[in-house]
Image (cartoon, rainbow, N blue to C red; front, top):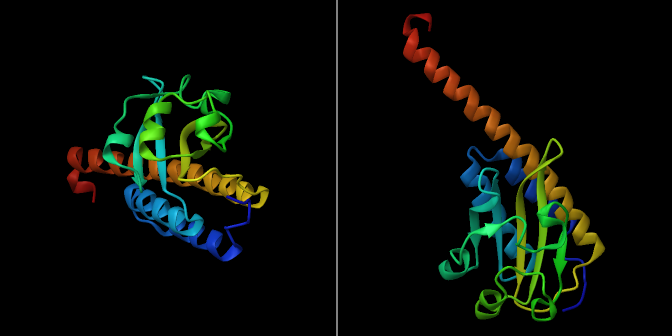
Length: 183
């Protein structure tokens, strides 16, 4: 596949609108993975969130991938796409020529020929990963790399917002349970 630009400013604006206007984290993630697959014409996309206690990436949302593939086993941070241990962008243009995958046989069975993985960061810490899966060998353009990087930066901000919003709601519920007359 060529490295033609696939993400226009209009498509990127739609990504940002989806991120900023979603009412829940699930709605945002589900809409974003669908938009990415459609805009890029790729096999699938997944958003993973880091479980720091287990050092594993846990699936938040995916589209275009089989249940067998997304449930292939734990995605260990220090073994999955080994370059940078998910703390920097990893681009595997051809999975069949790469030794960097944790589950290379599963990628082959799934028909995944290329994987683009960008970390999702929040305040300087990696909290997840956005992964794009292509059915063909893929030399992603520099233009699209920049848009995907900007998308993951906005995802980090959105996840921080949802984390804060959920914390505030929990505090509010606790206060209501303790002192319902204050409201």
